[in-house]
Amino acid sequence: MQRYSRITGWGMYVPERRLTNFDLEKMVDTSDKWIVERTGIRERRIIGPGETTRTMAVAASRRALEVAGIEPIDLDLIIAATSSPDHLLPTVATQIQADLGAVGVPAFALVAGCTGFMYGLVVAHQFIASGAYDRVLVIGAETISKAVNWEDRTTCVLFGDGAGAVVVEASQTPGGLMSFELGADGRDWDALMIPAGGVAHPPDMEMIEKKLYTIRMNGRAVFRFATRVMTEASRRVITQAGLTPDDIALLIPHQANLRIIEYAAKKLGFPMDRVMVNIDRYGNTSTASIPIALVEALEQGRIKPGDNVVMVGFGAGLTWGAVVWHWQPVETDTAAILVEDWPIPQRLQSSLRRVRTQAWNARVALSEKATLALIPLYTWTHRLKKKVPRPSLPPIVKKK
Image (cartoon, rainbow, N blue to C red):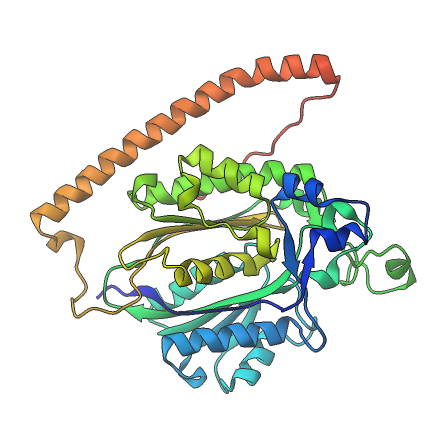
């Protein structure tokens, strides 16, 4: 019998301290108007005394377990996605396990930049689908403020701290993960990085003097990459699920930049009222951004049983990930339904969905061809004005 996955519990934690754009105006050469126009961010949360990635992850996890109605010891696996662990050794996952009281439960940390939670969600589903585990806790937690150069106005305005967690359980009712895509393009690994602190450049005086322990980012390269993969990965997982944007109740994108989110939504044909946006209040919380947005969407009643939700992110590496999740948080008495046993009306609906998906893809392909046809003219006139070389975009390696 096929096994499905469902999210039964969810929780989030953000620090109490708010760092507004007006606060940043006193710290660095910037302004509220400049930040809002370029990022959509108005404030972000910063950890206080005694708070760490570990403490935030534990708080979010306890809430998720409470919603799921299970005890920590009932878990089969803990996956903690983060790029800012309390220590390089040991893994923060076992510290979280100990604080929760989930003694004996296997736990590991996952590092995939801001895409970490997406990778963790897919890994959790694979363990469940294979029959290995029944309950997996997936966490996305970050303390990015500790890796920010507060004198660099191009990066310090972007990031905030926080954590989100979900409990993923096995189910016999069709639903949960309908399709997914994980990807990476390591050729641009240095577009977003912390230069020192690892074995390639261990801690030394140069690291401190030059602040090589802080985030360095090629903003243009990341922006180009993000706008492309957010759109293409979302379109591919929607197609794989046999759906169109009309079948998606909510798009939950990584909260990195409002302009990236708006661009992706426009290309996909999503009105902004079906896109979850909270970047204005939290900034970019890295791999915590999607679970935090998911929790808020649920608390606001924007996701209901039977809804299809797309979650999509990108991050350092460069990495990306997207899923279509059919929301079915409550287990029903209905046994797992095999496709070949579906009644005729459902088979007709499935056929209609395939036709709609093909029509949508045809429209998108036509739009992309028209855009590509105009690029040479636009680039030629732009180069005449600006006298700059034409940038080249690395191709995405599609999953076979």
